[in-house]
Image 1: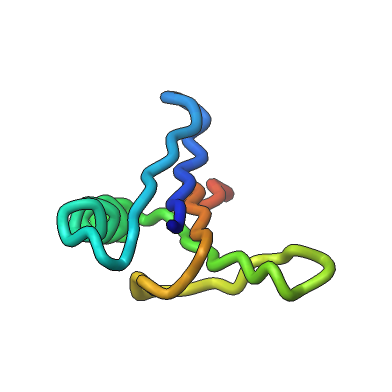
Image 2: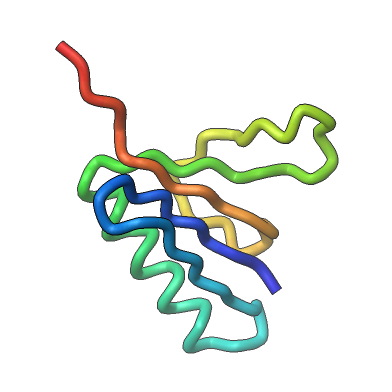
Length: 77
């Protein structure tokens, strides 16, 4: 089982859980991932093996990842 964490400062945090063997949950996670990327969000794959728990920026959905975190792109000027 894997999780896509959406960290939304307006709507609150949301978790989408998927399993590789569950086509519907996998497709839903992929759909939301693509939608958020299209809207300018950033996605990070969290590697449990790294001691500092930093994520790696990804641009494509990784169905083998155990955890993906998505955040809005930082605003600046």
